Image 1 (cartoon, rainbow, N blue to C red):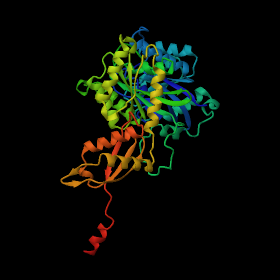
Image 2 (cartoon, one colour):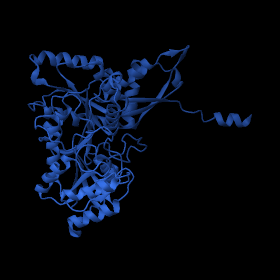
Image 3 (cartoon, helix red, strand yellow):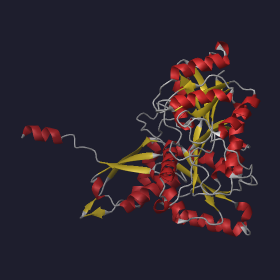
Image 4 (spheres, helix red, strand yellow):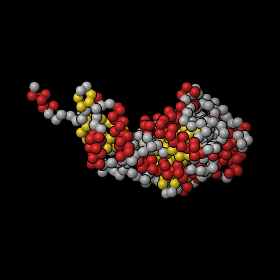
Length: 477
């Protein structure tokens, strides 16, 4: 069994920088602005020969429970309860602050083993802050520089001393690094051999990103799905900054949900931190398989909603729309018919897109939403045999052949599926450059209807087959 380490401390002491150092990649957003981290984030980490899970937390602040800092503190207190070991992080450069002593008392009362991490120890004058850290009464402070990777051997020894060798070197999971790497790979590579791998694999965790404008209810929706207050929520817009992943099991199907920051129009984004948050959300979309677009049902289909949906489709992800805050709607039947008509009209590039009314506050419609997610995922992974495709193509060419361009008829020879995730097809034809886009859209829509592939992007590549005698003719000359 691996152990869990919670990194806690007041704002701006370098907790997220230490978290990134331990997990070996820049997952958490880091900025000089205090209070960047708000939700707790858990990830597999490694410190030389020690393997464990590390929890990044929000800065500990003394505030009213109902306020945003108070709710952030509640998330940190949950992390303390979950952890087996606590890294109490201070800023050695600035020395102890009054809040450090207050929070040290809370940590002491938890009864958990503690390692005092004196971060920013490379700075001039940090020795004074190191000596002050003894006043906390939590043991010897360990000087480290999370940014530069200094002091990590001493930190490893401190972990072993705090937990004991038996606990620190407990049952290690041999495939930890491979599993972490597998969770980060991009999906959608070409499949050259249709029989090389199954078209649908439900044994690996399905990656689902939840996106939308600020205050649409993304974090509340994830909390409602998993049945616990895992993510920080509230009436304030823009609470979520990092893309936080949550593991979940739905009816025996393993899922990994990614909460993302709200995406505003580019013209309204001025702060560097918000730019970083949006970039983190875009990265989550590219890593995802399914993307749930959360729309506020009281103000749906704003321009930004359509731009987000278009981005997801262009990236080749499989979109599902959740019309949230359905409990606030007075005439649900009339509005649902109107919204579904708008979905078809405004997003024709993914015709048949699944759209489900939900209420994250009351839990209404969540099972239907997940059913739509599973159906869409199956379509996104679907494969059609070459024989079926070419029988379909014969009927299409007989009913509606490609037009003549510059007095010459375009010829289509055959079609085959080259990849899945999303479905991608190669059409062999004469003069691909001359093929009108309107006819390519006709082929795409006909494919979608004939083989029941609603709501996912379909990609068609036009190729010309080379003349096998062209090279010989050149040689003879």
